[in-house]
Length: 326
Ligand code: GYE
Image (cartoon, rainbow, N blue to C red; front, side, top):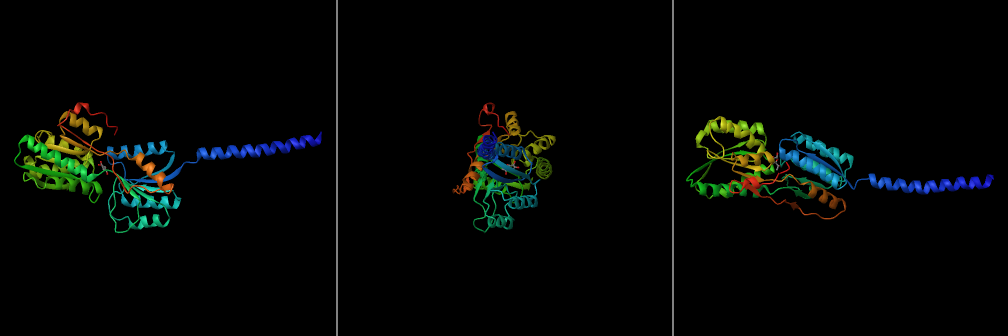
């Protein structure tokens, strides 16, 4: 009696070890994400940015990517500190949206020395050094500026204007969208003799700054202003009430051109108080996850990935524009 029960005990232990270990491995696989991604977001300055963060979180879930998300509260030093934490944590891939273009060399060299690939999301950097980043996933901001300029030329033609006085409210100084949206627009209108830029003023992509800038532009130029070209919806939405308070009707007394095409600006376009909104999609999460997974697998990736973008304007039936989702 004693021998068989001991044998049974040993057999049960063996079975437990074999199956137990098997189950453990399965559980581990189920809980083990495919990749650990550190992402430093700029902040929450606009509907665009909030939509971008939401999309990245959703897509991380869809692709089984474990996301370490850090919000830099609009400060470059916070982004640099976040990247250092990602390096210390030994994430598989680092991604970040650089608030400005300069000043990243040191921290990116640290990431490179740690062997962690870096993806730029939304905005680009400027550097003399080779191989600090793998790719940039973001809009073609130059083309957005071109679309805004081309719209203005068509609008001036259709209204038969002989002189067009423009004020420009720009995004964060030294950021890629600010530089490129300005360059694309200016290059497009520069040979048109009717166009004159009265002033470009820094609105930092913020609604409150958009209002302040517009107040100061109205004080300086008043009814000389024919066109307000604003680098994002938030600043445009800040500027519009100021224009109205000063007694002008935006959309007819002044041509209003904006960028982003979030839902609020599209609603105002439908009311006729904005004339043109160039699209900039915040939905970069899918490309980000796919690119990060490729990098982890040691595959090569495209150095520049631009989403397709369009524009919306009073030249079309604005009633049929579908919901924007941000
Ligand atoms: O247009 C603006 C945001 O970098 C494209 O940043 C982005 C810009 C966007 O705050 O609304």
